[in-house]
Image (cartoon, rainbow, N blue to C red; front, top):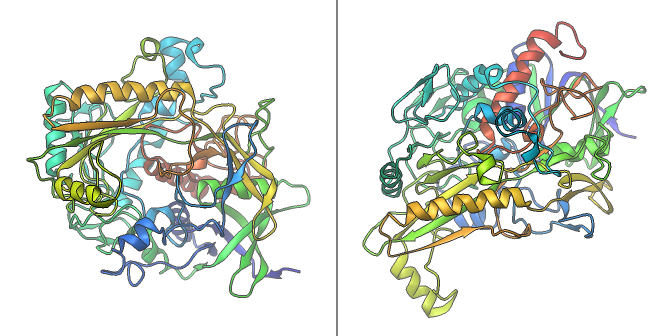
Length: 589
């Protein structure tokens, strides 16, 4: 029989970005809150302190900051015709483990989606007609608008401390910013960073072709900054250890640098680490949650934590798995199209070009995760889908974002992969290459989904979650279009040689190489309960005291890194809880 803890007003599952946001905002209401975190406690000091954290082999190659497959993993297959097998070695995506979640090891790119991405099905219908939507594409609108979300995007940017240059300030296009972004009510809280040499070269080449370069929006402090919670950030020193690493400089936007120490000062908030939630417990009629059951690593026993309000704020894949094993929502069936939990799993479509210059020295040890100059000229709201034959778009970025030598050794084609020839190539080309990346949208499809595996189980005896996913022709066509345009630009830059890496038409999903940790969908938002798991306030349909946050709410994936939308939706959700739900608990409308 499980041990039972004292009842709380709120239990939060996972203490990453959204768990931290929900925690501090609800703590201000005086509620008794406990957060349950599967991994270890993590603070800037001692866990991320210098020089221990900048160990590229330990953290960048061996993934010591990440979730280990023995803790939790998925099985993967490309189609229903295949037998799914467990994801045993970290490759394609790298979920985090510990307080702060993926917010500790991300690169810091923080985007708002374009307004057209929030209402993408309507955008397609109004401009080209629904006939151009592929039959298997489950293209959808969010049940809320960009205008509704704008104040909450602004709030998250101020809390996270985002550096950038506004492109559309209150409807007026601003010089030097992104002219294709949605309107913003205020400028970024910090100015944009200076551009590194490679970024400057790309910006000049893009401008010469009539494109519109602008600095990347960065969750990396460009100046000293104090956020609305009183948390202080220090300016980045361009050490290049952002992706896969915690920040020792208090410069990268993360729960640690922007929320957690302020949250811990509330006496009505507590958190427990090494506490893995196994299931959400439901009332006899199934219409509300009574709390959660978790596994206490210290005592090696199950514990029931009763609560009036359950916030599911773990990583998107873990959130969906927890819903599936807890019986939250009807499981999606791709054959019939019925059901909602596990529906619309989506990913990201990326590519890039690497250029080699014998006489240019790019100092690759100087950079940060969100460094660079971008263009949005081939983005979602700029492409003519009818003429181009695909739905979607991408932004491009150039700039040194990884100062780590082991993972920053680009070599021209034909260079040996080992031995004396490889060493000679490193000596000749290290520091003499730069890259341009394409970061593209990924649509949702009837066949790409998440459910429970019939064979494999985790260490607690629960079925593993099964991922059925493959690339679809629409997104591959979009990717090839980005390649065509990017090669045209790269050829104007005077490189001695170059190589392009984009997925070809017919490419199959390969789980082995790293691609991105932008796993989205599975508990999507919807206007009605038959179309998704949560409503516009991230409230689970049919279970009014359960709220699910994070990228699992995405109806399809945008062209941008997801954190900006994740943060905006979290503030929108907690605002509704504070102003509506706490006064009158029940379904929000």
